Amino acid sequence: MKFIDHVKIKVKAGDGGHGCIAFHREKFMPKGGPSGGDGGHGGDIILKSNKQLSTLQDISFNRFYKAERGQHGRGKNMHGRNGKSITIQVPLGTIAIDVESNQILCELTKENQSKVIVNGGNGGFGNARFKTQKNTAPRTANDGQVGEERIVDLELKIMADVGLVGFPNVGKSTLLSTISAAKPKIADYPFTTLIPNLGIVKYGDFNSFVMADIPGLIKGASSGKGLGIQFLRHIERTKLLLILLDGTSFDIESDLKILENELKNHEVDLSNKPKLIFVSKNDILEDNKIIKLLQKRNIISFSAITGNNIDIVIKKIVENLEKFNFSKKTTAKKI
Ligand SMILES: Nc1nc2c(ncn2[C@@H]2O[C@H](COP(=O)(O)OP(=O)(O)OP(=O)(O)O)[C@@H](O)[C@H]2O)c(=O)[nH]1
Ligand SMILES: [Mg+2]
Image (cartoon, rainbow, N blue to C red; front, side):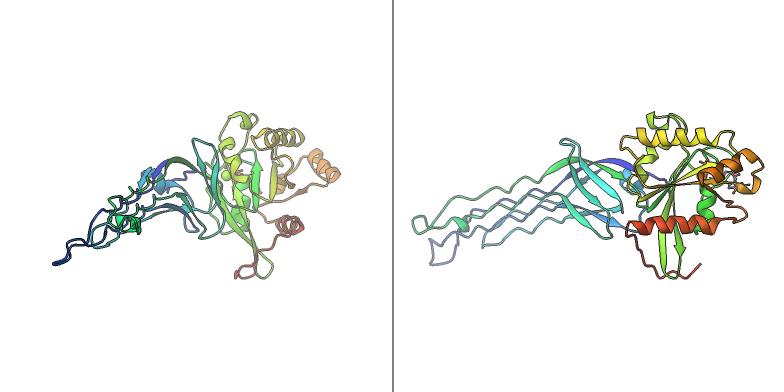
């Protein structure tokens, strides 16, 4: 399955059916009243969130959606059938933007949330509706309304509570795989992670939070270098950022400055988000300078390989999430 987080689609709701002009005809009743039925409503196009989906891939295969038109009204006061609506299933976290006006049409952040993005046209009235005392045989009926049409940008911002941010190869995916059931690809080279990975981290008896691992950031990421930029938007909605620094780096302090700068320069300033800083790979930390620096700055280091301080990392994350009244009950067993 390919991770696709941006798709442009064209949607056209169904037109309304036309009202009908007809008159009641019966033997010995030459001048029966008007009997033209109304047209049916055109079908709508609806976006609906689906928890099972994690990409907009399916939608990228079919970029034009046209809902059925309403049938025209008929004689004998028969109304036209309504056109069928189309429901497009999208992953949780999808935002729909009208391309022409640049307005947000909806943000589907809850399960099974739905929103009509183009309305079908109303059916026209048949001539039976136009009968008055003065005009008992009207020759008027309405045409159905034209269904709405628009071009819509669908953008997926994945839903996670915590976002992992760091240079490539610092051990972000390794941490996610250690504390959740997620199985991201891990390797000793930069840009192993090419798409965001989500993992559910369980803690306590019945609690959990969702952590997102995004591709590594590099200096200049916010202006387009590397891969990180296009994925930074996935952590815009997170409550907490986890900045990961590599314990084996030559200059941790400069790494931190570069990362903070990239967060600040992202199109939505991410530097004011609550964040925690951790240093990875403490099992191979030999440099005394780094160890002293960590102590001085009160930064916790951990090892995702030996498990050292992993419990503290989770505890700190939970403490911070709870500060924002975060609480998510699951039926998960204690880890
Ligand atoms: N010794 C040691 N090695 C680690 C630790 N965590 C990760 N590594 C190693 O560091 C390398 C990179 O790990 P990844 O988890 O793929 O790093 P990443 O930050 O996800 O990298 P990108 O996806 O490229 O951004 C792998 O060879 C891991 O085995 C750790 O705690 N200790
Ligand atoms: Mg990775």
